[in-house]
Amino acid sequence: MIDPIEQFNIEKLFTIGHIGNQEIAFTNSSAYMFGTVAIISLLMIGGVSQKQLVPGRIQSMAELCYEFVATTIRSTAGREGLKFFPLVFSIFMLVAVSNVIGIIPYAFTISSHIVVTAALALMVFLTVIVYGFYKNGLKFLKIFVPGGVPIAILPLVVVLEIFSFFVRPVSHSVRLFANMLAGHITLKVFASFIPMLAGVGIAGYFGAVLPLGLTIALTALELLIAFLQAYVFAILTCIYLNDAIHPGH
Image 1: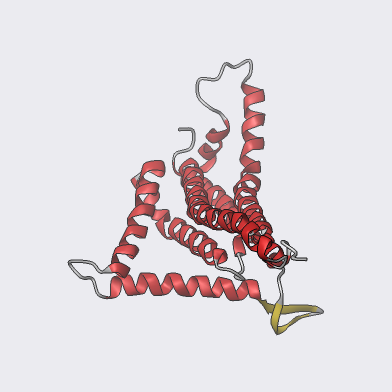
Image 2: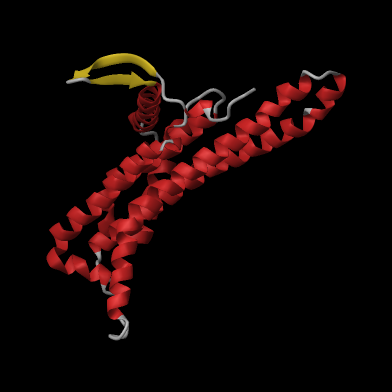
């Protein structure tokens, strides 16, 4: 039997050291994180090293990624939001590239673990709070008081705004984690039917055509979702940062 959850197991590759009685290990998740950063670095360094007037494939891809993120920031947080370009670009590329790597058979998807997506979401959340108070002082609290709300229901609205603000890291992280987890489980389940049916005999080979076709279709869908979830995570980051830049707007 094929276990669809086994692909998410974190396995120790070697021990780095110890802090007290706690072992610090280098895992397959760590290896894929380093691999993702290496691929992004090679893409961006290779894209800007030539600086050709007529860009090649790598340079075109690097420029496309750069302009895509820059346009997303300008459309959601304004030109002032471009100061956060390194943060948003790094998050988008990390999520997008790691999601695409995870589609490769027998590869590991780092965004399928809630601890990774929660760390990214908390980083964005804390950045919004710190920069919001740094730039606006107590005026940052205006994000909890929407304009044009009748005074009679204002206390209730403020409570709801505060609650929704502190729930942001949860929804921000769970959305990415749940989509990648569910998609890879579904893909693994349908793919497992192929060898099971093929082992039955001649009739099984014909029966395996259906799950094979569904697996190919799901793989294409997962590729689309890989980029879509990276975009959603990035644009939500921009929207949250806009609250720190323009509170109460």
